[in-house]
Length: 229
Image (cartoon, rainbow, N blue to C red; front, side, top):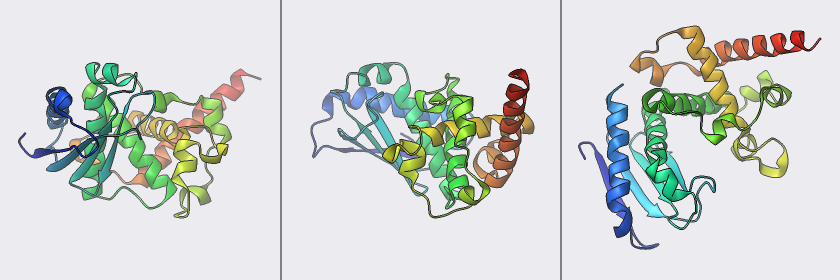
């Protein structure tokens, strides 16, 4: 598969039944990425697992610039549709973007940088796959985004709990808040920046996105408040 090599990890169970369909989804993802920029060389570790997103039946992780772990649960009621509708392709494109950013400016160490990296990956998937927002990209409404919007100190902090900001740990924030916030911030940055080059999709400075995205969200909130007066 050109520069993407699949490693089937079968200690948790045989993958023979799924190799053709999953392999096809991964190749389709590589081709989709290649339409915009050169796909990075990847080792892709594929295995069965129960530790997946319940609403999709799959999940991906990026490790550095060249390794992706792709987990799926064939017994999850949503997985078959996820696979047939191109969802697994989108998971791979998302993780490939993380790998590309890892090879450039990095995934990020501060909360703001991490939110931007996730938002960029989400919007890159939409750019190359032309898909509507995923559930985690529109998990909270604009009023909720405003209510919990992180302060400047929180955005610049390296001491944050990603599980709180992205996965609703301890119910301190709505589930998937960070993904929706990143998606919206990057969306406003795209509107402000105009056509995005392949290099910019990967290497844009997180602060540039935060500045443009925050200004866009604040303008939306101000307009909404004016309408409600």
